[in-house]
Length: 314
Picture 1 (cartoon, rainbow, N blue to C red):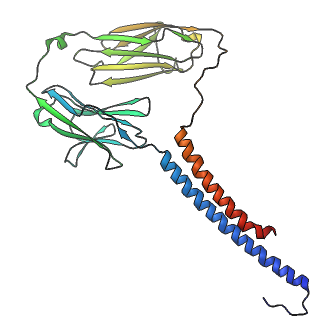
Picture 2: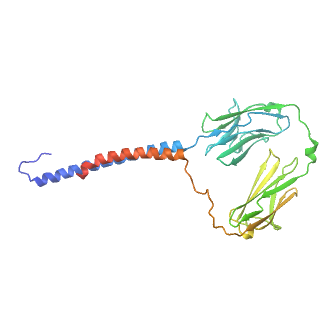
Picture 3: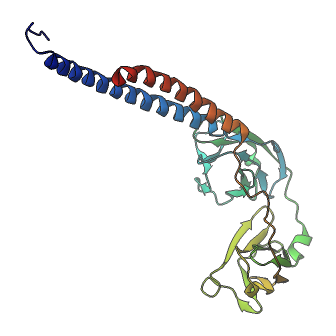
């Protein structure tokens, strides 16, 4: 911009102020965009570092069973997250199972899934009434990545052996759990029912002779789980916060009329002591990654902002 010699100095100053203001706003916009991109990249980097990697845990990789029996091919994984687990025969493009679903028309194959503490899950492949042509190498894999695979060799030998003791065995049932609990503490009872050669079809719970259902006992949760491997049915009775109303005799009855019972007493006592170990913790390695990454980025961006914005202040 060109100014005449006689033009007032105030006009020149105002023009210079407008130009300086536009320059500062432009620099501020650029700095804002740089900060957004940097923090986004830092956040993604930290997220990737904090996401644990799935890992297969050691197990039996060579399983030998007799014809007619049930083969259990183990697969145990830590830190599976939201990924899926699939079984297939090695060198075959056809999946046998994906997740808990069987993908082939074979009723003798299924997956037995169980969750364990420490973010551990089991995905055992069960093959009932195995035959000689079931022998071979089976692969348990995490479907989202190619490098995660676990191989199990299945060997099927000899003719089946009949065991008369199994056919004549009687149904059995057992109930375990804490017989005394403090007021407000959870109640957990486990009923395990076996039926000899047949798995019980159903398990019912009773409290003091009254059948437990979701309408009468809305604060009691009952779960059921059938295990082909153990030839049993397991049911859990859970109460999140116990009261004196939960005291009584609990009876577990299978569909084969096997009965087990346990008496539970809820105690009322002075509970002024605070339980320890309930606070959340951050793994030191994870915390170190997060703090270190953001500290370096914040320091760098603060320096850039200070150098850029000084002319705007002046």
